[in-house]
Length: 350
Image 1: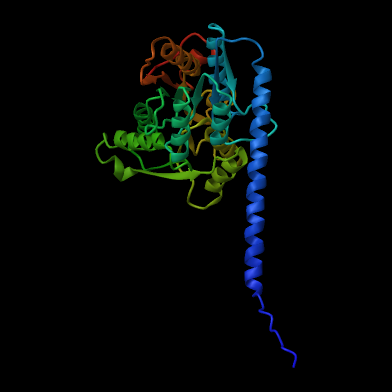
Image 2 (image 1 turned 90 degrees about the horizontal axis):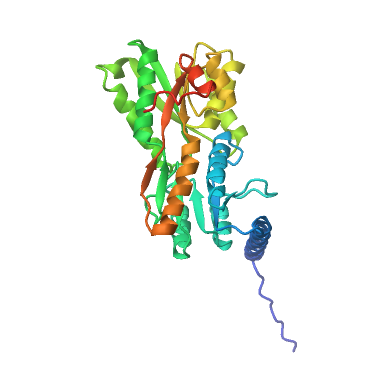
C-alpha cells in the first residue's frame, strides 16, 4: 500500500515577506557600497587638489554651497588661510554628487584634514560626528550654527539675542502703535536652537512697549529649505492663502529673504508687505534701494572667515582658543544704503 505524503504548503504572505526582506537587505548593502565608493572617489579628488604642499588643510562644510553668503565667508577664510600657506576647501562645491552635511563630515574625517569649519545644529548625528573628528585629532569650529553638546573647539557667529533686538526695533518703528501682523520665517530644522533665541528676543523687544501685544500680533511658520524651489513654494503659499498675508515678513537667512522679495513682486504686494531681510547680496541691496525690502541685516562675512582661521591657528600653536567669537552686524535701510554701497563705512553696528 502506497503511502501518501502530504507536502506542507508555505503561506504566500510568508514568501512575500521573505522576498521583501531579502530585497531590502540587498538594497541596503548596495547603497552602502555605492556611498563607500563615492567617499573614496571624493577623497581621491581631494588628494589631487592638495597635491601642492600646504602647512595646513581645513575643510569648510555648510548646508547650501550655492549661497552667496557662504561663498563670501569661504573666500574670506581662503584668503586669510593663504597668508599662512593654508588651504581651505569648500566641501561639496563643484562635486558631481550632492552630499548632506553628515556625509561631508565623514568624507572630511576620512581625508584626515587638519581642521573642520562646520555650519552645525544641535542634532545628535552631528554631535557624534564632531566628537569622532575630535577623537581623531581633528579640531572642529562651528560657524553661525552651534552644537553645544559636542566637543567642538570654538563657535564663530552672530549674537542671536542682539539680532532679535534689531528686528524687534524695526517692527516697532513700522507698526508705530497701529494694528500689525508679523510673520517670522523659521527654518524647518528643529535642531536649530539659535533661531529660537532670536524669536524670543524679538518678542521680548516688542514687550518693552506698553500693550504692544494688543496691536502687534506675531507668529512664525516653518519654511522648507531643502532646496531653493522648496523655499519658494513655502513662501508663495503665504501669499496664496486668503488672510495669511502679513504686514511685516521677517526673514532669518539669505534664501528666504530673496524668495520673499520675489513673491512680494510677483503678487503685487510691494508697499503692502514690509520685508525685514538678512544679508547684503547684490539682489537684496537692489531690493532695499527700490524700497521693496524695508531693511536687511548685514553680517560681516569677511570677519567670520578671518576669525575661523585665527581660532584654528591659535589652537595649533598654543593648544587653546577662545570658545566664542562674535562677529559684527549692521542694519541697512534705504536711508543709510550709500554707506555700504560706496564701500566707505560698516554702518551702525549692534
